[in-house]
Amino acid sequence: MSRIAPVPHRNGVAPSFVILPEQGRWPDMRSFLLARFPHLPQDVLFARLANGEIVDDHGRPVAGSDPYCSGGRLWYYREVPDEEPIPFEASVLYRDDYILVADKPHFLATIPSGRRLRETLLARLRTQLDLPDLTPVHRLDRETAGLVLFCLHPPSRGAYQSLFEARSVFKVYEAVAPWRADLLLPRTHISRLEQGDKFFTSQEVAGEPNSETRISVIERAGELALYRLEPHTGKKHQLRAHMSALGLPILNDPWYPIVQADQDDDFAKPLQLLARSLAFVDPLSGVMREFHSELQLQWPRSPE
Image (cartoon, rainbow, N blue to C red; front, side, top):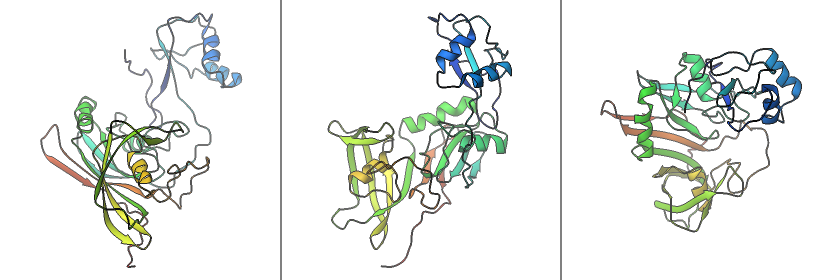
């Protein structure tokens, strides 16, 4: 059963929670939290309890000595020390009473996750625009730039989200990748994508196809080309995996075709992939909506 958080967003980030299992046999809350978060230093946990930073479903601070009580949740604000600032700003291209369309820069995650909380598109927009109920209808990879659709009106979010689930949103991406004279384009690439050897990657495998991308060339400059990518499905890393499988890895991709060692972001070398446009019939008004990114890829646009 879903619950409404008893504490508000902080700096655009929603509070996290941990469920208190029914089968728990811990004598007190301190014992449970030590078992649930074994990698958290004890002094940090005890300090958060002492400062009232962990609360129950009613927003009341929990003491470490409180008896363990199953079935509820404990709420807290997750912290990421020394979160790296992203030196690029998003812009809002459109806003009405129901939706907002943002132009996301490279390197900025769409939602809080992992080592990134405040330096995310959602947290920034919630804080800058004072929109605590703002929620994304879909997501872009952190490395990818371009259009992201948000909903401002929580009861309407499902209607917009269903457009993506029903593949009723026409999406166009652009990418810079190597030129292959031997590859016949335009073409529709169809394959089966499943989780790769690394947990965050996808790879093509034998079996019933579950992914489809239309690929065409917009322009060529020497050994590189600017491609138009039209995904008809929405599998994880679909465009990056498809281009890599065709021998056309997108420029500056740190994961395809080979996963590079974990390293700091090189802001001078963003992944050359851009969500250029979104088009759909608005499920509430019936009006045709079409939006175009104002960002540009690092493309020479010079004659051969």
